[in-house]
Amino acid sequence: MAEHQAILAPEKNPEYYAYYELLWHLGGSQSDIANLNAENVDWQDRTIAYFRMKTGSRVMFHFSESVVEILKALPPHGPLFPRIHKSREADRATYFKRRCKLRGVSGVTLHSYRYAWAQRA
Image (cartoon, rainbow, N blue to C red; front, side):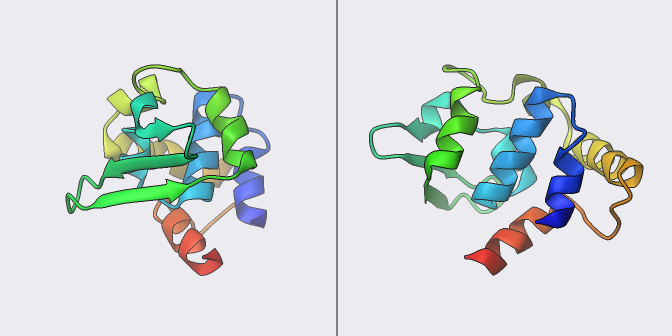
């Protein structure tokens, strides 16, 4: 949590801020979360459902009030992360690595969000 907060605190780009927040709360892979669409969100059931890019298996998360706040700030139609969605996986990883280095966080990758979520779950 401390590393996550250190990464988020100075993040000025609202799209990346929300992206890292959803990674933290959902624990999805960086590509799966980057490719989420507003249509993946079921507001009535408070779920996010999609098919994993790597395996094709269906994933469904029930989300809490903290995720509601993040989602409200994202586009209501189409990709939730329009710019990140268009970037390559390697570019997202490089951006993240640069951010970590600037913030004095080491030993963390975008994959760490999946592991951190699994530990919390």
